[in-house]
Length: 133
Image 1 (tube, rainbow, N blue to C red):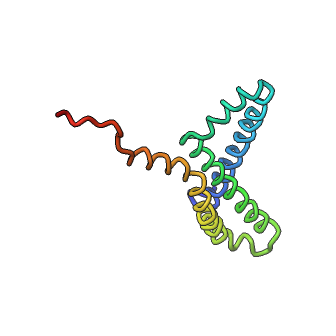
Image 2 (cartoon, rainbow, N blue to C red):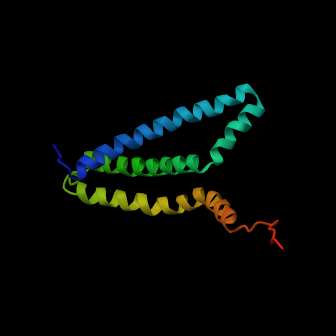
Image 3 (spheres, rainbow, N blue to C red):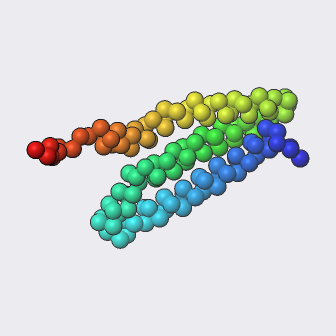
């Protein structure tokens, strides 16, 4: 029906972000349930969250939450505001811009520890270099 216009992308992104948030909820329930196996198992499970891949997944969760929330407000405006349908394309652009602008500081905060450790590792010179004389 939408054939590639903003309404189709809005619908698709809303469903994908909602499924991503639901998936995180299941992971969070499993994560918290590790407490039942004792502090050692829980602490080892939590260490997984410090890896770069999990940080990127956390970052995608943040993006999904922001998009889903802003687009939900857009959907409510379309449903309850008489002129909402007329401005739905503009509101979709506003949703995308808000999501990106608010996402950027969170991306920095989430990725900073991984970036700092990677940069420190890259610029660390070997301390026991042998000259070969």
